Length: 221
Image (tube, rainbow, N blue to C red; front, top):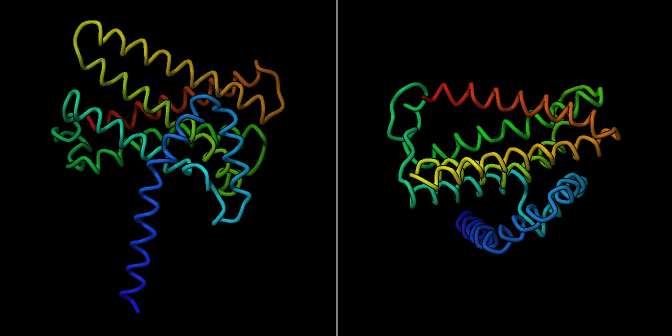
């Protein structure tokens, strides 16, 4: 009986993993072309039974994880291993392989949806706990994934010479502007406020997230 359950579990796991070949590109395309719609979609999906959530896309945290894994694969093929794996200073001593590096990067980039979600909850004057935090965190994971892809891509380009480094810096600036602009529209929609007030909340959250991201990153250098 246990062996049959194991076989069934492997069947489900194989189907789930292979389905990513279809639903990852679908989720990426929708997020790039209609990011705010996807953020609204994410929150509405959490109201469905667990078995019916995100049936035509990847769940936001999984989407973020796979995006970072794919950008790491691109990094390995283009510029080689990151110094966090090869270096042994600071907390990088605990990053010994690609899997641990991917998990660390997921944690780094998850700072952005966490801080944005927390800022929205506080702006609504709602008690900050797991309940009201989950929906905005999930919706933010959708747009954080392409943001992480662009930032990682910029980092790869800036490790190259000449015009590629300039292109990497331009991509980094574009990523920050794209992500920041989305936050203004997102806060305005959820708070029912004007764009100036929304820009204030978005800017504060962005600064907090970037500051925390930088501080945590330095612990690994």
